[in-house]
Length: 135
Image (cartoon, rainbow, N blue to C red):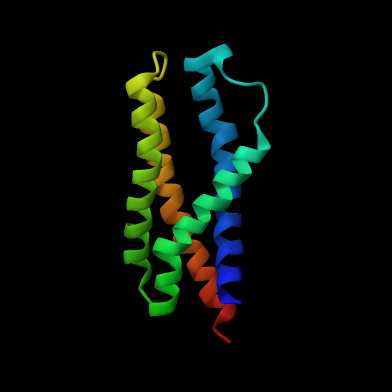
């Protein structure tokens, strides 16, 4: 039961925070540099697959072991930040290396955001789970 709470809490934090950041910062940034190369809307199926899978990976490598072992939140934040930097860095640095209009500001913003988002979601999701399942 605690793994379900952990997944739902982490996913909710991740999705809400990412939706705010995507709409307020990332979309204008990407529009400025990519313009008409962006779609008018998003493809929901691949977005859903990514979010579900990514949160599952965060749980598998960081949050579930921390929940099981009672790990302090600081090491959780560090491990999740490293995972986020790896995942978002792979996308951003590869895109920058091979796409003509990919801009360094897009790399910096999304790389930093993915690192922070992953760490924050893992820590807050774990804290919520611990609080709700402590009884």
